[in-house]
Length: 406
Image (cartoon, rainbow, N blue to C red; front, side, top):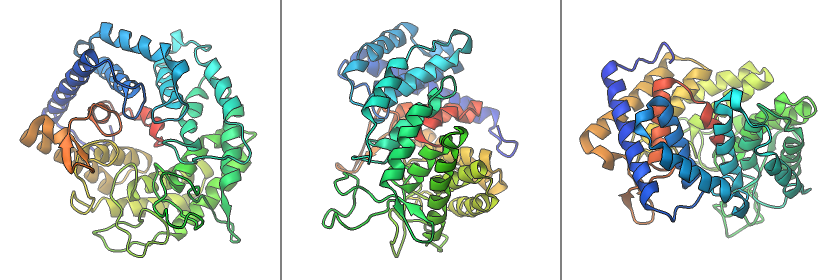
Protein backbone atom coordinates (compact mmCIF):
# COMPACT_ATOMS: atom_id res chain seq x y z
CA UNK A 1 0.00 0.00 0.00
CA UNK A 2 1.20 3.53 -0.64
CA UNK A 3 3.03 4.77 2.43
CA UNK A 4 0.71 7.76 2.45
CA UNK A 5 -2.41 5.62 2.88
CA UNK A 6 -2.78 4.07 6.32
CA UNK A 7 -5.54 1.56 6.99
CA UNK A 8 -5.65 0.77 10.68
CA UNK A 9 -5.84 -2.77 12.03
CA UNK A 10 -9.43 -2.13 13.10
CA UNK A 11 -10.35 -0.91 9.63
CA UNK A 12 -8.63 -3.92 8.09
CA UNK A 13 -10.72 -6.21 10.27
CA UNK A 14 -13.87 -4.32 9.34
CA UNK A 15 -13.10 -4.52 5.64
CA UNK A 16 -12.31 -8.23 5.90
CA UNK A 17 -15.62 -8.78 7.64
CA UNK A 18 -17.55 -6.97 4.91
CA UNK A 19 -15.78 -9.00 2.21
CA UNK A 20 -16.79 -12.23 3.99
CA UNK A 21 -20.41 -11.12 4.19
CA UNK A 22 -20.44 -10.17 0.51
CA UNK A 23 -18.87 -13.50 -0.46
CA UNK A 24 -21.61 -15.32 1.45
CA UNK A 25 -24.30 -13.23 -0.22
CA UNK A 26 -22.93 -13.75 -3.72
CA UNK A 27 -22.38 -17.48 -3.13
CA UNK A 28 -25.92 -17.91 -1.85
CA UNK A 29 -27.24 -16.04 -4.87
CA UNK A 30 -25.34 -18.32 -7.26
CA UNK A 31 -26.49 -21.40 -5.40
CA UNK A 32 -30.17 -20.55 -5.49
CA UNK A 33 -30.49 -18.79 -8.84
CA UNK A 34 -29.99 -20.72 -12.07
CA UNK A 35 -31.23 -17.89 -14.29
CA UNK A 36 -28.15 -15.68 -13.93
CA UNK A 37 -26.74 -14.54 -17.26
CA UNK A 38 -23.06 -15.13 -17.84
CA UNK A 39 -21.75 -11.59 -18.38
CA UNK A 40 -18.91 -9.78 -16.67
CA UNK A 41 -20.51 -6.49 -15.68
CA UNK A 42 -23.74 -7.80 -14.18
CA UNK A 43 -23.66 -11.58 -14.39
CA UNK A 44 -21.91 -14.81 -13.47
CA UNK A 45 -18.41 -13.98 -14.75
CA UNK A 46 -18.12 -10.87 -12.59
CA UNK A 47 -19.39 -12.69 -9.52
CA UNK A 48 -16.92 -15.53 -10.06
CA UNK A 49 -14.14 -12.96 -10.35
CA UNK A 50 -15.01 -11.65 -6.89
CA UNK A 51 -15.25 -15.12 -5.36
CA UNK A 52 -11.89 -16.03 -6.92
CA UNK A 53 -10.23 -13.01 -5.37
CA UNK A 54 -11.99 -13.56 -2.04
CA UNK A 55 -10.73 -17.16 -2.01
CA UNK A 56 -7.17 -15.94 -2.44
CA UNK A 57 -7.63 -13.63 0.52
CA UNK A 58 -9.31 -16.26 2.72
CA UNK A 59 -9.96 -19.75 1.34
CA UNK A 60 -12.51 -20.44 4.08
CA UNK A 61 -14.96 -17.88 2.72
CA UNK A 62 -15.66 -19.75 -0.54
CA UNK A 63 -17.41 -22.99 -1.40
CA UNK A 64 -14.90 -24.40 -3.90
CA UNK A 65 -17.36 -26.99 -5.24
CA UNK A 66 -19.89 -24.27 -6.04
CA UNK A 67 -17.22 -22.14 -7.69
CA UNK A 68 -16.03 -25.05 -9.84
CA UNK A 69 -19.59 -25.91 -10.84
CA UNK A 70 -20.39 -22.37 -11.96
CA UNK A 71 -17.04 -21.95 -13.69
CA UNK A 72 -17.78 -25.08 -15.71
CA UNK A 73 -21.15 -23.61 -16.70
CA UNK A 74 -19.41 -20.43 -17.86
CA UNK A 75 -16.92 -22.35 -19.98
CA UNK A 76 -19.50 -24.70 -21.48
CA UNK A 77 -21.72 -21.84 -22.61
CA UNK A 78 -19.07 -19.67 -24.27
CA UNK A 79 -20.19 -20.72 -27.74
CA UNK A 80 -23.69 -19.36 -27.05
CA UNK A 81 -22.59 -15.85 -26.16
CA UNK A 82 -22.72 -12.54 -27.99
CA UNK A 83 -19.33 -10.85 -28.39
CA UNK A 84 -19.31 -7.59 -26.38
CA UNK A 85 -17.59 -6.89 -23.03
CA UNK A 86 -20.61 -6.22 -20.84
CA UNK A 87 -22.62 -9.42 -21.20
CA UNK A 88 -20.74 -11.28 -23.88
CA UNK A 89 -17.64 -13.22 -24.79
CA UNK A 90 -15.10 -10.39 -24.50
CA UNK A 91 -15.81 -10.00 -20.80
CA UNK A 92 -16.21 -13.69 -20.01
CA UNK A 93 -13.04 -14.64 -21.86
CA UNK A 94 -11.16 -11.88 -20.01
CA UNK A 95 -12.22 -13.50 -16.73
CA UNK A 96 -11.09 -16.94 -17.90
CA UNK A 97 -7.72 -15.52 -18.95
CA UNK A 98 -7.42 -13.78 -15.57
CA UNK A 99 -7.97 -17.12 -13.84
CA UNK A 100 -5.61 -18.86 -16.26
CA UNK A 101 -2.79 -16.42 -15.50
CA UNK A 102 -3.15 -16.72 -11.73
CA UNK A 103 -0.90 -19.79 -11.66
CA UNK A 104 1.82 -19.10 -14.19
CA UNK A 105 3.32 -22.58 -13.87
CA UNK A 106 -0.02 -24.13 -14.85
CA UNK A 107 -0.87 -21.60 -17.56
CA UNK A 108 -2.71 -23.15 -20.52
CA UNK A 109 -1.53 -21.31 -23.62
CA UNK A 110 -4.16 -22.96 -25.83
CA UNK A 111 -7.22 -22.30 -23.66
CA UNK A 112 -8.52 -19.27 -25.56
CA UNK A 113 -6.80 -19.53 -28.94
CA UNK A 114 -10.14 -20.19 -30.62
CA UNK A 115 -11.53 -16.99 -29.09
CA UNK A 116 -8.53 -15.06 -30.42
CA UNK A 117 -9.22 -16.29 -33.93
CA UNK A 118 -12.95 -15.70 -33.61
CA UNK A 119 -12.44 -12.06 -32.64
CA UNK A 120 -9.87 -11.52 -35.40
CA UNK A 121 -12.34 -12.75 -37.99
CA UNK A 122 -15.50 -11.18 -36.55
CA UNK A 123 -14.13 -7.69 -35.89
CA UNK A 124 -12.24 -7.16 -39.14
CA UNK A 125 -14.32 -4.35 -40.67
CA UNK A 126 -13.08 -1.20 -42.34
CA UNK A 127 -14.45 1.25 -41.52
CA UNK A 128 -15.74 -0.03 -38.20
CA UNK A 129 -19.56 0.02 -38.44
CA UNK A 130 -20.90 -0.13 -34.89
CA UNK A 131 -20.48 1.11 -31.33
CA UNK A 132 -16.96 2.29 -30.51
CA UNK A 133 -17.12 2.66 -26.72
CA UNK A 134 -16.15 -0.13 -24.31
CA UNK A 135 -19.34 -1.55 -22.81
CA UNK A 136 -20.88 -2.76 -26.08
CA UNK A 137 -18.40 -1.57 -28.67
CA UNK A 138 -14.96 -1.93 -30.19
CA UNK A 139 -13.00 -0.50 -27.25
CA UNK A 140 -14.41 -3.28 -25.08
CA UNK A 141 -12.21 -5.86 -26.80
CA UNK A 142 -9.07 -4.08 -25.64
CA UNK A 143 -9.11 -5.49 -22.08
CA UNK A 144 -9.17 -9.04 -23.42
CA UNK A 145 -6.44 -8.36 -26.00
CA UNK A 146 -4.25 -6.55 -23.46
CA UNK A 147 -4.67 -9.27 -20.82
CA UNK A 148 -3.92 -12.02 -23.39
CA UNK A 149 -0.85 -10.14 -24.66
CA UNK A 150 0.91 -10.83 -21.36
CA UNK A 151 1.34 -14.45 -22.52
CA UNK A 152 0.72 -14.45 -26.28
CA UNK A 153 1.11 -12.34 -29.41
CA UNK A 154 -2.03 -10.24 -29.81
CA UNK A 155 -0.74 -7.92 -32.52
CA UNK A 156 -3.35 -9.12 -35.05
CA UNK A 157 -6.29 -8.44 -32.75
CA UNK A 158 -4.85 -5.14 -31.58
CA UNK A 159 -4.21 -4.11 -35.18
CA UNK A 160 -7.93 -4.52 -35.83
CA UNK A 161 -8.80 -2.42 -32.76
CA UNK A 162 -6.37 0.33 -33.80
CA UNK A 163 -7.65 0.28 -37.40
CA UNK A 164 -11.23 0.49 -36.21
CA UNK A 165 -10.53 3.49 -34.04
CA UNK A 166 -8.52 5.15 -36.82
CA UNK A 167 -11.46 4.69 -39.18
CA UNK A 168 -14.01 6.24 -36.80
CA UNK A 169 -11.94 9.15 -35.47
CA UNK A 170 -12.52 12.81 -36.22
CA UNK A 171 -9.29 14.52 -37.28
CA UNK A 172 -9.18 18.26 -36.64
CA UNK A 173 -7.00 20.72 -38.55
CA UNK A 174 -4.93 21.53 -35.44
CA UNK A 175 -3.91 17.88 -35.02
CA UNK A 176 -6.45 17.10 -32.35
CA UNK A 177 -8.39 13.84 -32.55
CA UNK A 178 -11.69 12.74 -31.01
CA UNK A 179 -14.48 10.24 -31.52
CA UNK A 180 -18.10 11.26 -31.94
CA UNK A 181 -20.80 8.87 -30.85
CA UNK A 182 -22.07 6.96 -33.89
CA UNK A 183 -25.35 8.23 -35.26
CA UNK A 184 -27.32 5.20 -34.11
CA UNK A 185 -25.48 4.68 -30.83
CA UNK A 186 -27.71 3.84 -27.88
CA UNK A 187 -25.40 6.03 -25.79
CA UNK A 188 -26.11 9.28 -27.63
CA UNK A 189 -27.61 11.98 -25.45
CA UNK A 190 -28.88 13.96 -28.45
CA UNK A 191 -31.21 11.69 -30.38
CA UNK A 192 -33.07 14.53 -32.09
CA UNK A 193 -30.17 15.49 -34.33
CA UNK A 194 -28.14 12.37 -34.99
CA UNK A 195 -26.09 14.13 -37.67
CA UNK A 196 -24.63 16.48 -35.08
CA UNK A 197 -21.25 15.38 -33.69
CA UNK A 198 -21.42 14.38 -30.02
CA UNK A 199 -18.17 13.89 -28.15
CA UNK A 200 -18.79 11.91 -24.98
CA UNK A 201 -16.35 12.52 -22.11
CA UNK A 202 -16.92 9.40 -20.02
CA UNK A 203 -14.46 6.54 -19.68
CA UNK A 204 -17.28 4.07 -20.21
CA UNK A 205 -18.68 5.52 -23.44
CA UNK A 206 -16.43 8.31 -24.64
CA UNK A 207 -13.07 9.67 -25.74
CA UNK A 208 -11.20 8.74 -22.52
CA UNK A 209 -12.21 5.13 -23.10
CA UNK A 210 -10.82 5.14 -26.63
CA UNK A 211 -7.53 6.56 -25.33
CA UNK A 212 -7.39 3.87 -22.65
CA UNK A 213 -8.18 1.14 -25.19
CA UNK A 214 -5.26 2.29 -27.35
CA UNK A 215 -2.62 2.56 -24.62
CA UNK A 216 -1.55 -1.13 -24.66
CA UNK A 217 -0.81 -0.82 -28.39
CA UNK A 218 2.14 1.40 -27.48
CA UNK A 219 3.87 -1.82 -26.41
CA UNK A 220 3.44 -3.43 -29.86
CA UNK A 221 6.27 -2.18 -32.13
CA UNK A 222 4.27 -2.50 -35.36
CA UNK A 223 1.43 -0.39 -33.93
CA UNK A 224 3.26 2.03 -31.65
CA UNK A 225 3.44 5.01 -34.03
CA UNK A 226 -0.20 4.74 -35.11
CA UNK A 227 -1.41 4.38 -31.54
CA UNK A 228 0.76 7.26 -30.33
CA UNK A 229 -0.70 9.58 -32.97
CA UNK A 230 -4.25 8.78 -31.91
CA UNK A 231 -3.49 8.98 -28.18
CA UNK A 232 -1.58 12.27 -28.30
CA UNK A 233 -4.13 13.90 -30.59
CA UNK A 234 -6.99 12.77 -28.35
CA UNK A 235 -5.24 13.87 -25.13
CA UNK A 236 -4.59 17.31 -26.63
CA UNK A 237 -8.25 17.51 -27.64
CA UNK A 238 -9.35 16.40 -24.17
CA UNK A 239 -7.22 19.00 -22.42
CA UNK A 240 -8.57 21.72 -24.72
CA UNK A 241 -12.10 20.84 -23.59
CA UNK A 242 -11.52 21.22 -19.87
CA UNK A 243 -14.09 23.84 -18.90
CA UNK A 244 -14.86 23.60 -15.19
CA UNK A 245 -13.49 25.98 -12.57
CA UNK A 246 -15.78 26.00 -9.53
CA UNK A 247 -14.28 23.78 -6.78
CA UNK A 248 -17.71 22.27 -6.05
CA UNK A 249 -18.15 20.95 -9.55
CA UNK A 250 -16.22 19.13 -12.20
CA UNK A 251 -13.63 20.16 -14.75
CA UNK A 252 -15.50 18.11 -17.36
CA UNK A 253 -19.14 17.50 -18.13
CA UNK A 254 -20.62 14.43 -19.76
CA UNK A 255 -20.08 15.76 -23.30
CA UNK A 256 -17.81 18.36 -24.85
CA UNK A 257 -19.32 21.79 -25.26
CA UNK A 258 -21.43 21.89 -22.11
CA UNK A 259 -21.46 25.40 -20.69
CA UNK A 260 -22.00 24.30 -17.08
CA UNK A 261 -20.26 20.95 -16.54
CA UNK A 262 -21.52 19.06 -13.52
CA UNK A 263 -20.49 15.49 -14.17
CA UNK A 264 -20.71 12.92 -11.40
CA UNK A 265 -17.48 11.53 -9.99
CA UNK A 266 -17.05 7.87 -10.78
CA UNK A 267 -15.64 5.30 -13.17
CA UNK A 268 -18.21 5.80 -15.91
CA UNK A 269 -18.02 9.59 -16.05
CA UNK A 270 -16.07 12.29 -14.33
CA UNK A 271 -12.78 14.03 -13.74
CA UNK A 272 -11.07 11.27 -11.79
CA UNK A 273 -10.90 8.64 -14.53
CA UNK A 274 -10.13 11.36 -17.09
CA UNK A 275 -7.15 12.32 -14.91
CA UNK A 276 -6.15 8.66 -14.64
CA UNK A 277 -6.18 8.14 -18.41
CA UNK A 278 -4.27 11.38 -19.05
CA UNK A 279 -1.61 10.32 -16.53
CA UNK A 280 -1.27 6.86 -18.07
CA UNK A 281 -0.95 8.45 -21.51
CA UNK A 282 1.68 10.81 -20.15
CA UNK A 283 3.79 7.93 -18.93
CA UNK A 284 3.19 5.88 -22.07
CA UNK A 285 4.19 8.72 -24.39
CA UNK A 286 6.77 10.31 -22.07
CA UNK A 287 4.76 13.53 -21.93
CA UNK A 288 5.20 15.03 -18.43
CA UNK A 289 2.80 17.85 -19.30
CA UNK A 290 -0.06 15.34 -19.48
CA UNK A 291 0.87 13.99 -16.05
CA UNK A 292 0.95 17.44 -14.48
CA UNK A 293 -2.42 18.37 -15.94
CA UNK A 294 -3.77 15.03 -14.78
CA UNK A 295 -2.52 15.72 -11.26
CA UNK A 296 -4.25 19.11 -11.22
CA UNK A 297 -7.54 17.57 -12.32
CA UNK A 298 -7.29 14.71 -9.81
CA UNK A 299 -6.44 17.02 -6.92
CA UNK A 300 -9.41 19.17 -7.93
CA UNK A 301 -11.58 16.06 -7.78
CA UNK A 302 -10.19 15.24 -4.34
CA UNK A 303 -12.00 18.29 -2.94
CA UNK A 304 -15.44 16.87 -3.68
CA UNK A 305 -17.71 15.17 -1.16
CA UNK A 306 -20.70 12.89 -1.61
CA UNK A 307 -23.03 15.74 -2.53
CA UNK A 308 -20.82 17.53 -5.05
CA UNK A 309 -19.74 14.15 -6.51
CA UNK A 310 -23.39 13.02 -6.82
CA UNK A 311 -22.74 9.82 -4.88
CA UNK A 312 -25.84 7.78 -4.15
CA UNK A 313 -24.60 4.22 -3.72
CA UNK A 314 -21.45 2.14 -3.27
CA UNK A 315 -20.65 0.35 -6.54
CA UNK A 316 -17.62 0.47 -8.81
CA UNK A 317 -19.40 2.42 -11.51
CA UNK A 318 -20.17 5.60 -9.58
CA UNK A 319 -20.28 4.77 -5.88
CA UNK A 320 -18.24 5.45 -2.76
CA UNK A 321 -16.31 2.16 -2.67
CA UNK A 322 -15.59 2.72 -6.35
CA UNK A 323 -14.14 6.13 -5.53
CA UNK A 324 -11.91 4.71 -2.79
CA UNK A 325 -10.54 2.25 -5.37
CA UNK A 326 -10.07 4.81 -8.16
CA UNK A 327 -8.33 7.30 -5.87
CA UNK A 328 -6.11 4.42 -4.75
CA UNK A 329 -5.18 3.71 -8.39
CA UNK A 330 -4.62 7.39 -9.21
CA UNK A 331 -2.44 7.81 -6.12
CA UNK A 332 -0.38 4.77 -7.16
CA UNK A 333 0.35 6.20 -10.60
CA UNK A 334 1.09 9.76 -9.43
CA UNK A 335 1.50 9.80 -5.63
CA UNK A 336 0.27 12.94 -3.92
CA UNK A 337 -0.70 13.58 -0.27
CA UNK A 338 -4.05 15.07 -1.34
CA UNK A 339 -4.90 11.99 -3.39
CA UNK A 340 -3.94 9.74 -0.48
CA UNK A 341 -6.17 11.84 1.78
CA UNK A 342 -9.03 11.46 -0.69
CA UNK A 343 -8.54 7.69 -0.76
CA UNK A 344 -8.67 7.66 3.02
CA UNK A 345 -11.75 9.89 3.00
CA UNK A 346 -13.69 7.45 0.82
CA UNK A 347 -12.46 4.44 2.80
CA UNK A 348 -13.72 6.10 5.99
CA UNK A 349 -16.95 7.09 4.27
CA UNK A 350 -17.53 3.51 3.12
CA UNK A 351 -16.94 2.01 6.54
CA UNK A 352 -19.13 4.58 8.25
CA UNK A 353 -21.95 3.87 5.81
CA UNK A 354 -21.70 0.15 6.49
CA UNK A 355 -21.59 0.62 10.25
CA UNK A 356 -24.71 2.75 10.13
CA UNK A 357 -26.78 0.80 7.61
CA UNK A 358 -25.22 -2.62 7.15
CA UNK A 359 -25.70 -4.35 3.80
CA UNK A 360 -28.36 -1.86 2.76
CA UNK A 361 -25.58 0.73 2.48
CA UNK A 362 -24.17 -1.35 -0.38
CA UNK A 363 -27.39 -1.60 -2.37
CA UNK A 364 -27.43 -0.16 -5.87
CA UNK A 365 -29.53 2.89 -6.71
CA UNK A 366 -32.07 2.22 -9.44
CA UNK A 367 -32.65 5.39 -11.42
CA UNK A 368 -35.94 4.11 -12.81
CA UNK A 369 -37.61 3.09 -9.56
CA UNK A 370 -35.73 5.79 -7.59
CA UNK A 371 -34.93 3.25 -4.89
CA UNK A 372 -31.97 1.25 -3.62
CA UNK A 373 -32.00 -2.45 -4.47
CA UNK A 374 -29.88 -5.53 -3.92
CA UNK A 375 -27.45 -6.03 -6.80
CA UNK A 376 -25.00 -8.95 -6.91
CA UNK A 377 -23.18 -7.76 -10.03
CA UNK A 378 -19.67 -6.56 -10.70
CA UNK A 379 -20.19 -3.04 -12.03
CA UNK A 380 -23.00 -1.88 -9.76
CA UNK A 381 -23.25 -4.39 -6.95
CA UNK A 382 -21.76 -6.67 -4.33
CA UNK A 383 -19.19 -8.44 -6.53
CA UNK A 384 -17.48 -5.24 -7.64
CA UNK A 385 -17.68 -3.71 -4.17
CA UNK A 386 -16.01 -6.83 -2.83
CA UNK A 387 -13.22 -6.63 -5.42
CA UNK A 388 -12.67 -2.97 -4.56
CA UNK A 389 -12.45 -3.70 -0.84
CA UNK A 390 -9.99 -6.54 -1.42
CA UNK A 391 -7.73 -4.16 -3.33
CA UNK A 392 -7.68 -1.81 -0.35
CA UNK A 393 -6.19 -4.66 1.67
CA UNK A 394 -3.75 -6.25 -0.81
CA UNK A 395 -2.97 -3.21 -2.97
CA UNK A 396 -3.47 -5.32 -6.12
CA UNK A 397 -5.47 -3.37 -8.69
CA UNK A 398 -4.33 -5.34 -11.75
CA UNK A 399 -7.84 -6.72 -12.29
CA UNK A 400 -9.13 -3.22 -13.08
CA UNK A 401 -7.68 -3.57 -16.57
CA UNK A 402 -11.08 -5.04 -17.44
CA UNK A 403 -12.44 -1.52 -16.85
CA UNK A 404 -9.54 0.13 -18.73
CA UNK A 405 -8.07 1.63 -15.55
CA UNK A 406 -4.60 0.01 -15.56
